[in-house]
Length: 357
Image (cartoon, rainbow, N blue to C red; front, side, top):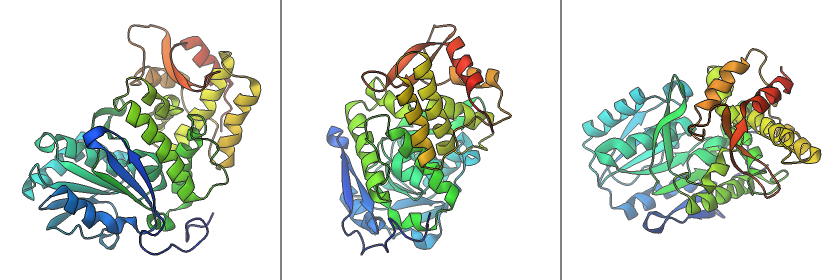
């Protein structure tokens, strides 16, 4: 895969032919712009917000961060799950205070999904909420993490256990940022694109990068607009994530998020088949889609099944007061849905049958 171009062509002029997806949330609605050069729209978005100053938190070189058009402080950040902690959030809030940021000002994130999450949570907490704009720079962040308002950090006990819902003012997915992504970061993003196949986005194989991002964001926007706070439909976005999050934690994040979700997606297909929800052809389709994107699909050799089951029991979807039962988003006759009474024995049997590296 070439990382020097997007969709096999040189990027077009700034913002030309950008796709725009609207997240409809009443007075908190916002646009997700997708295309080459859209980061240059940042001053327009800041101007519309009325902010007098900004703090830009960036995990990318300074020359990749556009001037927001108001006085600002640039704060360096680092992507990576090891930095996705409450300590990082506290340090960011202190930087906001030192910069004199008020509730009427704005925070800008520039980086991958972990930066989007930590900066979003810091913005949600500082002064009980200050506006945030996301400039996601990885495929994973553009496809998923930057849209929808979920912000969270990890605890040693599990992934994304502390967070808040805080919608951005805008999301600017500049595909120019993707030109230098290493191969593994492409795969990381493709893990989320692969799972979109099973939650209503359609078959995205063979489409160009911009089209894949747009279709994934459009489906997420539809779901979030109907269910902002995970009371029903939004559970679909967790397809493949129950085992995926457990694998991330159990491997010490040796598996990247998208890679773990890919394995979780294959597992979700196998589990749905074992429960009689889907037939063999649909089970095989899960593996076909994941392998199409060059993603891992086997369990890592060293992971412990007991630990995985315990971690999945702490998942945010886990059914309260149901001993011996686990919750998964699973495919079925009417499509994917949350199934909150999966017998632990069925999960263990499927784990035991999963091939290992």
